[in-house]
Image (cartoon, rainbow, N blue to C red):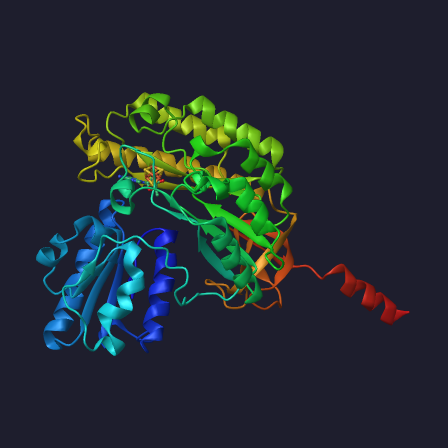
Length: 445
Ligand code: 5AD
Ligand code: SF4
């Protein structure tokens, strides 16, 4: 199983894996040994498309040796290409969109036997929360609150692929969070393409809004940390900020996609906010939530972006001082409004701007992380460090990875004194809890 793309897709992959496990299909040690190969695809930029082509080429070669192997392609690329996928990649047996994971079991059949080749469920839309799920970590979970997107950002293929926004009912979301808490989950991340417009499409009897959902999740016993992604700045209303400030479990962290710092480009992107409105929102959030960590998404080289527009983006980055940023080179997606715009920015210009942006982002992130040195941060332990097996790894409430000296088990919340920082990670030492010190004193006397 290979997954491309965003957290929503990673979450869908957990459900796909859960379904396959129900069918008696575990993870094969290598792709070579797999009877069923599933690609959960993304199509937001061109890169994942090309990567998929390479992966599918390898899978098709293995299938030529052993024609009983099954190749399934799910996710946004499958949905966007629809019928064409079988022409482009004749080795594909099953294609399914994000809304039809529920049926994967029927199509694949037990152990891949009786697979309905060439079937696809690309027109359906259903929340698959009731499906078995294979979670990577027992103490962290994603919870999908909505699917689709009602925005019309001119560069974005998502609305065409994932359709109009549809919110899950509040009772259903809270029931899932409660069930997860009883299973030992401590941290949840609420997922939606535009997570803070959640609730507006619900029937009047149950219509509510995202701030209320945060409060309801915060009230669930056992949930220690709540995150959410991604909100749209245009829909970030005061009640959500108030809920973030008032709910203990809601982390001091927000991902607030900027896309561009130029109001002119934002308009062409159809983001419906200006640079000034975005900056005012940041000020309001920082005033309400002390110590807030802010992350963002930025696109460089949108059609018509001038040097002056780009410099405005750099200015906003310097003014906001982001803790982290995902930076993207604009990639035209067929069928979107921006792909048809005339003034496409030359590739070299995009790359040169990207380098300047990354440099600025990293310098600031390093400074922001250095600002944490000397502080004690609450860390949710995730396991052993990826770079040094002698260290543990975890995340702060502000969502920064910390490698640290300590003795805790995965899933535990511990305090860590931060001693060093890079632009991406912190390093530190677990502190001895104060009650342990009291016990030691008592022994001494
Ligand atoms: N080109 C480059 N980046 C894009 N994104 C969305 N569409 C495109 C595109 N066509 C970026 C946006 C979005 C993130 C998930 O991907 O920054 O927030
Ligand atoms: Fe795409 Fe804009 Fe919707 Fe995000 S809000 S998924 S960028 S259309």
